[in-house]
Length: 456
Length: 180
Image (tube, rainbow over all chains, first blue to last red; front, side, top):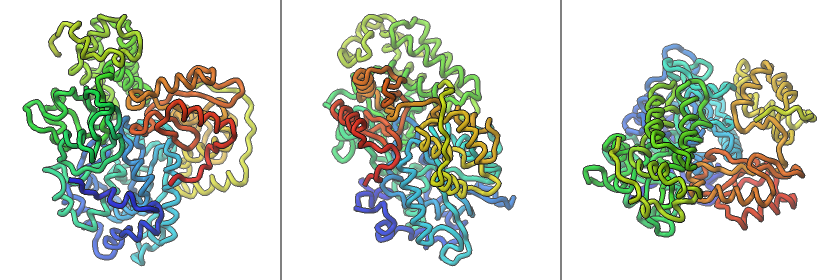
């Protein structure tokens, strides 16, 4: 199962430099595409591959490319979304830090497919040392003739630059990212028009995640049909998973989609089980925005079938009993974790990161943070649980961009699966005074104190 | 963050101007405003890590845009500091993945050791401690950002060492060799 596409050469000494990267077959996809394929043929290969956007939404990349407006005759742009900020997600950083030329090669081949002459990589400002690594790699690519005027004598020009943000989660939303790239506040735009028609400087623009772009060279070299053979069903290919929390071996892993969650979690090739061998309590499989799963729904779905690392399997059962693959931010929690505290933590995050344009999100995330804070600190009321449910329900679907949904879902899932923990906080405030309350006394040992109530 | 009226010496050195010109070259001639975020980073780095109103006005002048266009950006993004901060700013990630791996107690420890609360600067102007949201280092928790770099998988002895290194002048915020 341990098939490597993106990280195949990650451990080669010096792979960060142009020379070593080139010696290991780097930039072959540019040669192949420019010499023997039309741009549309490259798009077709990506379509055939079944590649789905790796940033979190999972929209088919080839289809997104096919929407770009070529009729207007306006300049077109490819923008790489390297604003990785979804809590639990640190995979793109790994790729850019250790194999920067893979992303640059992907940008060149993809820009050719889309007919772009000016493309950008938008990286979050906190990754400043990675920004410098990319700047160096881009200079090397210019020096070697892969960027600039008349690339490989084909008459095609491409300029590529790296642009940095300055600390705003919302800029990972593609229209906010475009605003930010234009030198403005990161306020998402109302769609339509979609970026494919009117994006950067009102030109047709495609925004793709780092991992989506970095896999394009392999698809061009080996064909989309070969890529589609990897993985399972409509979840083709491999995926980078960034694991954190209470697992034994946190880090970035490349998995073939379709691997079982059990094997990923427990085999020594991957996470090696739980840190300190404590019991697994909950899992967030795809970054902080996707629903948290309780222990009984992690390795098996509600019907008792094996849960797999794929778009379909992780979402089996909908939000009632499933979650999402999302960005691949795999956060593991053991029995010392307080779900209420953790949910408050996420609400604080979303409140801080809300851009403020839409009232349901701007106000609602703040209300959720406040209510969760008072429950966590022993001042909660029984009706606060219903109040939280009501607030999250009124945010979801009522905002310009998906940040509202992303803030609402974690709260809904926590109440859905861990309602008794909220009740415990409300009814036994003296037992949760210390912020490490479940470190000292895991909830499993005290949950009998809470009379079971029906789930909403 | 409140706005500060503290005085700031403005000095656009030839090196800084050259770097700004390089960044401006990344955008079409009629889209120079796009360079605002990267230019603000460079200008802030060269001015003790904060941006006074006169300095923001200077950036507006350099880019040929209105001052308000700079202010609205500076106030939106968390990485731009609108008041003087310590020479070394420890930005502890405290979002979930770091929180469950000891970020809060490490930040408390550091605050206690340096005698300040979260958000404050030590009296000697050396250190500022801030709790921030997810920095994308979830698997290497607990961690902090200092200048352009991350310090990861921290514990108390490593924290003690980092503070010592700062005091000994061994930490360059922006010019560490690129890590292999």
